[in-house]
Image 1 (spheres, rainbow, N blue to C red):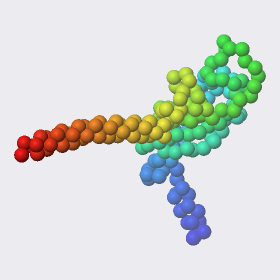
Image 2: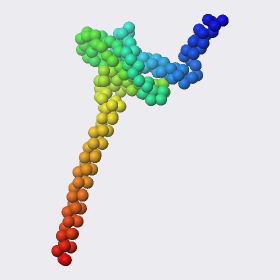
Image 3: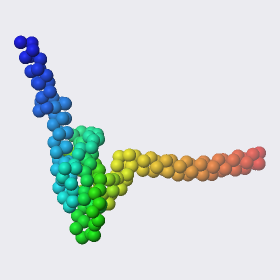
Length: 176
């Protein structure tokens, strides 16, 4: 009786479709992965010359927020470049790609190949500029610049005020 109960207990604790927080989170993550992979498979870059059996989920990068997940897929194409390249002269050159795809609320909200190609807008992408780390660095630079400008202004204004006070003190001392 105990031997049968233990496996049943383990099965019930490992129920992926449970309504627990972990089960719900797991389900959202699993659905997000499927959305991300489907997006990749239907992207112009992959449909043009992607090698079907080469797609792998290279990493589950991170939770990108509540019910948002960022996935990393790797895959190969028969040629280099991105998007639909049917108007280009291409050499046969099997090319490795990595695609970061972020899914939120059941849809792709960001997708970039090799930090070079925005899969949503089908144009070159500056991954650093729109990544969170990039934004933080830009905000940091702006903050430091703003502080330096304010300090410069404050130094000049305070210097002007100090010279006026000294001038007034000299005038009042000379009158006495």
